[in-house]
Length: 259
Image 1 (cartoon, rainbow, N blue to C red):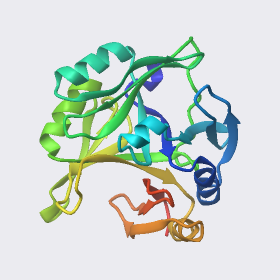
Image 2 (cartoon, helix red, strand yellow):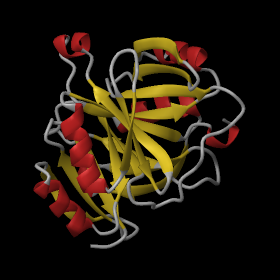
Image 3 (cartoon, rainbow, N blue to C red):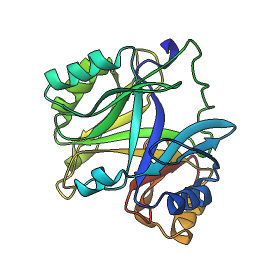
Image 4 (cartoon, rainbow, N blue to C red):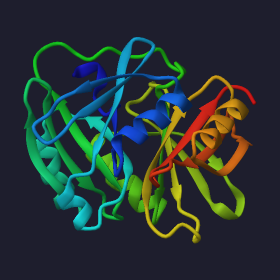
């Protein structure tokens, strides 16, 4: 997966009601869906622009009983999942799901950074690399944002683990610095991170799905039974965003080039 090293290559929703979540995201994002039977239950694949970009499944009963709640997780491509999972632990993070194989797909481990924000390490099997969606394609994830307990320590963790490099730093005034990051020097930025404001109770990753226009996207969220928690707002660079919650309680966001 050389061309995908340290990129977010997949996004996955675990939810309390998979059929309802499928209907919601289909209505909001316009994605196509296909169901893949799995030993532990159906896995629904979401496609945009002809490319599979995300998946969703029901929360396992054991995870729900342990307190897990609906949420999106980003998969980051690495060469060696086992080595990176060990590095997460060595850096003060947690391995939530130990390295395991997905037959015919690859190997993964779900981890949390030292602040508790969850993400997944992934390495594909075989020599074929997954297709890359055209940037900005509606229904794909266009931005990945970390609300960290502390920006400086979070940056040290992720740059050391994944080799991410700093892009533009945006002065947010009293809210501090919003640090954009790229997977490698000279590559486009793929996300940003900042110290979370005090009203947010915990560190977390928030993933932004591309839509054509933000007002129409926000209305689709409301019409489908979700909530718009913040926005629309214009961000540096001219894009527009809204931050949302789906009907099952999973946080997500939308980004668009126009209002």
